[in-house]
Length: 375
Image (cartoon, rainbow, N blue to C red; front, side, top):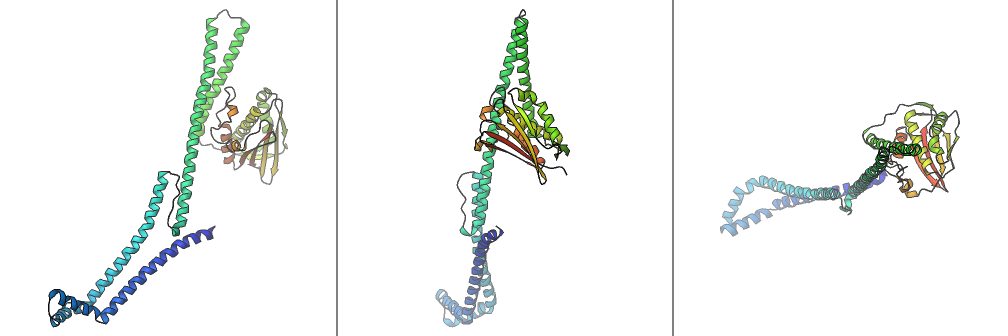
């Protein structure tokens, strides 16, 4: 790669050197020719001839004028001619060099214009052309990503605003019924209260998600690492999420060595595994198992969460860990999240020096997290 770069710039350097040598040689030849003309008196003959022609004088008088006013100062005239020649040729060289700067300036203007046209420079400026086009493509890609992220955020705000209004309307409606019908049967009143409470919890969850967006955008995550018992952490997390899992008849199978440890921040890691496990529970088939396994490979520990569910298309697998991204199937008012869970998980894992990825094949969806093993 370095050899290719040197070769590219070598063409440009060779072109510059070639032009500089040509200018120097031209200046040298002009000075030599002029000097030879002086030695052979040809310049003197020209001057005498011009004096006779324009001043209409005799040859002897013209020779005297030439002798006293030109020949006596021939060194001065020769120096002036040399300076004029070199200045003219140097000006040509700078003019030629300025053309390159103009091309680069036009290339920068093309970058600012944000059009789709490629930048074209002189053949010898190929390395600069490549770099400018690379920068242009990078800027275009970043702008597209920024617009996409902004669009997702706008969609998210719209979704959350809609989802907040739905449970809020239900809460107000059921409270009005409870207030208006004082003699409502006890069992019906209890049912309405339970529905109102469920909607209020949903509303609380959505409000917390709004705060989650603010924290994610404005707060840097700090880690406090220590050696952690991975088996105990996953076992405790599975027990805590049992109500979520049992609601769809799902269960957790833990295939993890009891002596396996990782070097990580306990609170942040629980958040990562919790987000992945909740995601698996939301997209698993009813009455299926979610298998959590872990294995140590050299200095890393790989933790996998595998569930049976609808296949995730390849084009959506790459977007699962993007901020504010949600699969269309998750746009249900009762279960839809902000799309921040997996994005936050990715950031936490990256801060630990690990990686996170997803795969979907033959009805099995697998999320894998690689973390540094404890020494």
